[in-house]
Image (tube, rainbow, N blue to C red):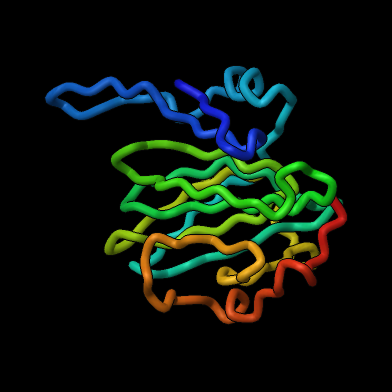
Length: 182
């Protein structure tokens, strides 16, 4: 598996080595020891989540505040999404910056998004199934949401559509008003 630090160095893109033949393919999607060597710290994943979305659904930008902050290792097993992480760590040299990567069942890429980042994605294909591991349990009282279209962040989503949003995502806060505590 290859690992590449992105323009925000704490965000890491993992690309597996895929073994294919006429029967199909095989790859290791996660090896704990290798993962910790790349991110240079110990991590325990406590929860795996899966979501299915139709085209143009946008989920996010979500995060949890301490003491229930979550790191996430995300990937797509059906379809294609545009995945986004926003640095919300005050004092970070990349505070307020975002990265976006296309993750798909075809490219099999995974993105490591550590604690202190808001996360969201938009489904680009007819539908998508999204898997992610988290470093802490879901905690509704610690969950927060940033507006997907906040002009201060300026995310350039790949499709010029009115996304399909949950009521929670419609009520997201503006970046300058969010609670961080990181």
